[in-house]
Image (cartoon, rainbow, N blue to C red; front, top):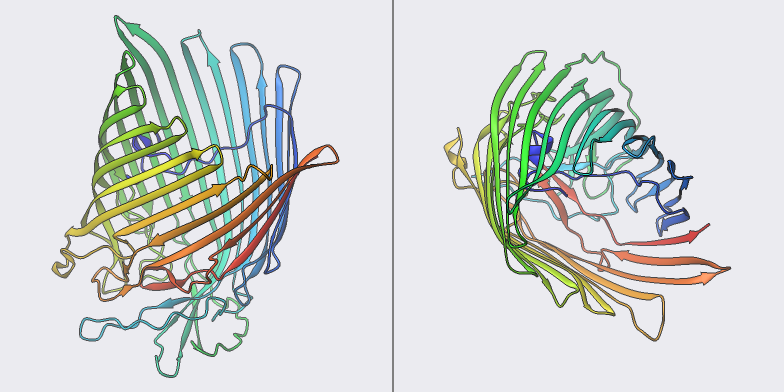
Amino acid sequence: MLKGASGLYYGFVPPSGVINMTTKRPGAPVAELTLRGDEHGTAVASVDLGRRFGTRFGARVNLAAGRIRTGVENVEGERYLAAGAFDWDATDRLSLRADVELIAKDIAEPAAIALLPAVNGVVVLPEIPDPSRNLAGGWQRYDANADNILLRVDYRFSPAWATSLEVGRARTFRERVFSQFENYDLGTGEGTLRLFLNPGQEFVNENVRSEISGVFTIGPVRHELTVGATRNERYQSGRGSQIVRVEQNLYRPRSVAERTITATIPLNPSEITDAGVYVFDRIRWGETLQLIAGLRWSDYESVARVTRYTAEDTSPTVSVIYRPIPNVSLYATYLKALEEGGTAPANTLNAFEVLPPAVSDQQEVGAKAELFERLTASLAYFEITRPSAIRNTENRFVLDGEVDYSGVEFFASGELTPAVSVVASALWLEASQERAADPRLIGKRPENTPEWTGSLFGEWRPAPVQGLGLSAGLFYVGERAVNPLNQAFVEGYTTALLGARYTRELGGRDVTFQANVENATDEAYWNTAGNNLLGVGQPRTVKFEVRAAL
């Protein structure tokens, strides 16, 4: 997860940051086989192969294939992956990289449960159903494939200065049939299953990035400067759905006969162009004080069949880091950024409409420390103001004012002793709608937003049994509003994880056996509550893995 200056570098992203997933690169020789499975019948095999060829060329290939079973009725499928990373150091100064990915996944999709209409301002929620139950048919599938390619050239002018150029393209194609159960009677369970039959949808993302970076010193001050420019073009077909309604029962699900698309569903394509120029400088005064300052100019345009949005803005980012002692850092950050307003879900009247961009602001102060030489901890207070996108009473997905967030976040990870490792987190979040076209929303909590979340995970490696690790974890999510008007709340829940890992040498090769029990107490809970829908958490699942060097 990249936070803080991610908007400066990547452009239109939310204040929370972005997940930066990178391809495994060639380095030391690796040849590893992994087999994964679970009690429900999942079986996936993967192989990781990589090595350098001489001093100039390296390659790493990852392959995976298998079947997926979730423990939910009629939910099963397959997944496939082929990924390659190739490095060529053409000279001591010039290097080239190529990343290629082919991904495919085809799996049935369980039905969500829609909220009942409010009565006297209150939404009555159903009992949490058996998490293994599915109101949808096994033919209601999410079938998608994607191909991604990224090419990069790096050239180093000197030991202190370098430039790079990246060109990438990602394409995803999917066909989807999903459903929601609605208008049901809580006494009998009888209701309507509304099916959304989506024919082929295509998403294309093309990106170019060029930057130059260098290090220089002026007097006692060291500068680490980066200047860059990006252009990102995104296209989505925006094809809608054919809707079919069938009778179903919440408590005694019936088999749902397969339906096919019988109507011509027009395209509603949209194109987004996000161009930007950025500069940021990490300025160091010795080992105790740093200033990170950046600025990004963005030019944004979104064009759809009936809408067009444009925006230009300059977004600053400033961070100050002070180290009073070597193992403690105090920091303060301010950033302003443009972020996309979102895309209307398929079950709204303006399905797939891209909303206009809006401005978000974030301030954060905190401390990070290295404790006992093996444990790292951080504590931060933050305030965020960002636009809010909601489903309104007309079933349209719209931007409707601003939401203020403030909170305290704690995180710690590392080793308490040579035999005990721990990861702990806690978040207190105060969130409320501060501006809205609908005055009833003022002061309300955003849907699906808990006030408290936390986790505690630990591993014990008993010295008498070399290679053995025993682990356990607890994960808590507090109560959440089911809609923007806060007409009901789903209860908080805690899930437990138990695990064991054992590594030993077999036939001269290291082999690791691992087993985990997820949701060990078989807790029944609503794992999501938003977009007028409720989702049920996964049942208890025993997973296992065997990893061996080849």
